[in-house]
Amino acid sequence: MCGRYALGVRMAFMRRRLQEQGLQVDEAPSDDEVRETYNFAPGNFGAVYRADIYPSEHGEGQYENDDSGPHNTSRTQNRDGGKDEQTQSSSQLHYKIQSMKWGLVPSWTKRKPDYGSLMRTINCRDDSLVEDRGMWTSMKRKKRCVIVCQGFYEWLKKGPGGKEKVPHFVKRKDGELMLFAGLWDCVSYEGEDEKLYTYTIITTSSNSYLKFLHDRMPVILDPNSEAMKIWLDPTRTTWSKELQSVLKPYKGELECYPVPKEVGKVGNNSPDFIVPKKTEPGVKVEGDGITDQNIVKNEDDPSPTKDSEWSEDNAPKPAAGIKRERTPEGPGEVADEEVKKPKTELRTPSPKKVTEHTPVSKRQTSPAGKKMRSATHNEKPIKKVNVKKADGSHPITKFFST
Image 1 (cartoon, rainbow, N blue to C red):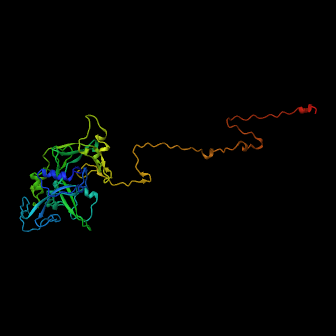
Image 2: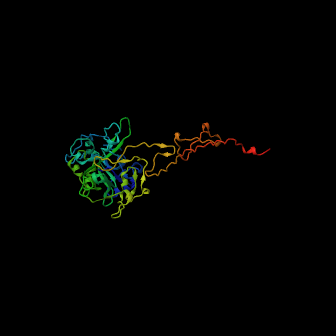
Image 3: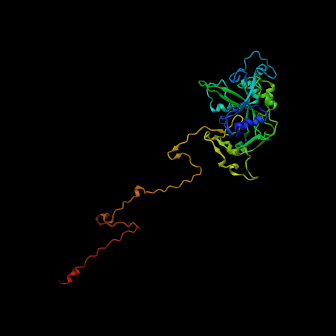
């Protein structure tokens, strides 16, 4: 939790809206750098808002590739707040929206992780950050960020054994963009020069409003709030109770409702996914009120989904790709209810029952003038009685004189 969210807005709109809410946005990616979809899944490139410290005389961020933090021994730190006053006074703050891949990959990773490993780092539990140890230690000190979206999906388990899962969409009641607390990192794989930026979403216990849906929820921050300023402050380079206190259940107003089940398949995309499911009271509508014309099936995500548990999410997980056989006529896919026409076959008699038909003139006669048995009945043939001629009898022609 969360394992799927909506990001169906352009970067220009996002930048303008954040600025209208009082946030400083000095830089933003182009539209093609961020995946614009109402069905945003792990592995896609999302919009991440973060602060960076730019030295006055240079154009690169100071902490991007520094895993141990700033090495300026002249700075002073506040142990309670973890603020680096020297760095703040000698540099200027730079805030930007950056394109990053969902599923955090630590900077020390040498090889590209498989999909299963990536799925384990799409979320970070708030209680895993309490102690100053573990894989999140370097990120929580100086690589904190905010993930921007429209809202997130959660699947409600229903029926015997929770086999039926009904997707729900959660958004702010005021309709504004939703901001998640997160962590980010930058990695360059062994033998590669390209830098890959990745992120994770921090989760906490659900508030009373979402308890029925799931026991976990993302940490939601209000734009330009004090909590958000503390979280994004790059001068806080040590973890503190003040930073930990930011990670708590959301107290603002949220709206949650069932949405079309088609959102469960990665690759499907439709604005109807964030709209309440169209149903009449007491009447179940087939297709959940959504038509195939409204769904865009993205060719980049052709893989089906399988019903599998994630560590903190009930969303269907993308399944491994299946190679489909193709014939010269086209794809080897057949509709589920395709009617097959019966084939008409010529029946041939058994070889034992085959009778050779020959012309009448060539028919064989029975040997020794033996009468053949009738083919239509089983009666025995009548024997011909030979009558002996009487003595002295002559042919009739003998009585005629020539």
